[in-house]
Amino acid sequence: MKRFSLTIATEGNNDIVNLNPELSRRVRELFPKGDGLLHVFVGGSTAGITSIEFEPGLVKHDLPSVFQRLVPDDLHYDHEATWNDDNGHSHVRAALLGPGMTVPVSDGKLLTGEWQQVVLIDFDTRPRRRTIVCTLIV
Amino acid sequence: MKRFSLTIATEGNNDIVNLNPELSRRVRELFPKGDGLLHVFVGGSTAGITSIEFEPGLVKHDLPSVFQRLVPDDLHYDHEATWNDDNGHSHVRAALLGPGMTVPVSDGKLLTGEWQQVVLIDFDTRPRRRTIVCTLIV
Amino acid sequence: MKRFSLTIATEGNNDIVNLNPELSRRVRELFPKGDGLLHVFVGGSTAGITSIEFEPGLVKHDLPSVFQRLVPDDLHYDHEATWNDDNGHSHVRAALLGPGMTVPVSDGKLLTGEWQQVVLIDFDTRPRRRTIVCTLIV
Image (cartoon, rainbow over all chains, first blue to last red; front, side):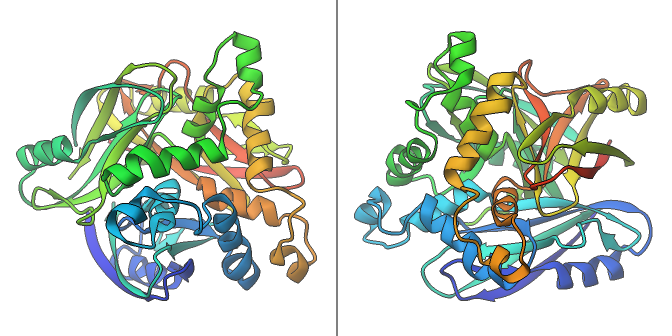
């Protein structure tokens, strides 16, 4: 088992960051031959991890606008009333998406599809620094 | 690899149970030093696992009310018409959320964020006893 | 660690395929005794993996109709405008559900509930051939 971390600065507000280039570089270095699994996890309750084709239409418009449709930022949230905060929707979106995923690797490469990238989505309402904990099981 | 189970009594109807205290206790005992992964899984098709800040606003109101908004209990469900049952929405909510997650651990601690707890959500329409199968990979 | 693949022909358009029979057969053959984890992953950005009770009401009507409610195929998607494509909703649904899951196994059996099956959902708008990468950690 090999563990490494990535530190990512985000804009918040559904900022979607492509993790594939850096994850691919690390996997190639740490484990160039053989089969394994890469687990990717963001600590924190207002961000999530998934995979999507990283192209501007999907990541700048389509996925953020569906999150706004499903979990609007202007609903009533008890979280905001209790804590005098503005990110109730951020917590709920993160809980729905989940904070991590596992990707198979082989011979130093992630086995994601050609148009499939691992991404971090920051749902918080302000810029954040996020730590991604990555674990390679071999 | 180390395997253990938790048995949890729930109220059903979106009851959200904080698993972090017991998971933390077990990880501290079973694997006090080094890096690992903890996989947490609920058997059954009407419950799910995710992480959220475990505070009353989010777990008693905000997340349950978004599930009711997204997958209302009073839509028509063929599952209910076929089986003369009342929990079609419970099955659909559980399929959307997913039955498990994996959390990195290090030196006997879960690497969840300070305000991030692993939770079981029971979507069924009655109290249930749930078995959570936990697997620690070291 | 043992790796195997399944090739699945789907109809697209929310076709839901039960993977449990083939996964169970492989696990029984490859690892008949002891505790392990099975990771199941679909490469590609328009399909997902989850678990659900595999019965016609849920898989032919209830889950597909909720996806249509949450992420309608007739919204405006920038992805479609940019690439002259028709599957923006397929990408968004796949990103929400996620491309993989992990299931505990013991003594050659998946520890899914009695009414819980691992399924592939193909959200694309045409029939596809999908490769499922499966990894057994023991």
